[in-house]
Image (cartoon, rainbow, N blue to C red; front, side, top):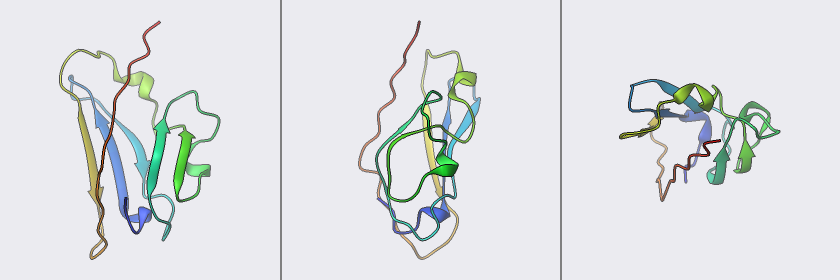
Length: 98
């Protein structure tokens, strides 16, 4: 939950230290990412979405570039402007391997 999503950048980094940007300062003064799914196959790119971001969105950069999957993954959320506040309540990483 965040009061101003336009301040946020969210990245996912794989065990080989390759990163993909899920979300980069979208939504302006809109609030929150709730039940947000980032998937390359989603019909709506995150840049075409509106806050609150709920549902399936294509990430800023493809997740398909993040192989290998074995090891520790890192989710980074950065807020580039104060004094807004936010809270990460939960996140899950699923792998769909053909």
